[in-house]
Image: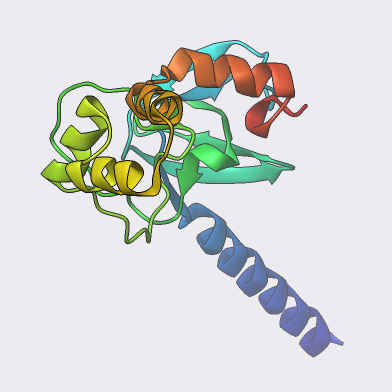
Length: 175
């Protein structure tokens, strides 16, 4: 009679210990420039603290599209799952920027897309000489060339992206 009790107690303790280690060992990293630790699992809840990209978080639990996490400073709250990853993001030492589309795509790892200096400067000056020559050769109207130049040089601020996401109830705003 004692053997089944001892066996089941030992099994229960081992399973409890195993699952505790699995949950406690899960580390998430902030991958978005504009991630916020919230008091509740809702974008409209109060912000506890803004999280810096690359900051490690300990996973406490999951609820739908939200993770309950604890920071290194022992602050516990909720973060939208699209703002974190189990993989540590590469952090480049650059000037303050908008985080690429307002952080919407920030932290997506595994991309092979790289912009060289020519690509970056081209977005400032409009069509490349090759593209201009092609447009002239094919008879592309000047109005179309000017419209494309206008699109290429357009910038969108992170606040505009956030407003778009809120109005469309997209991502963390899809409550």
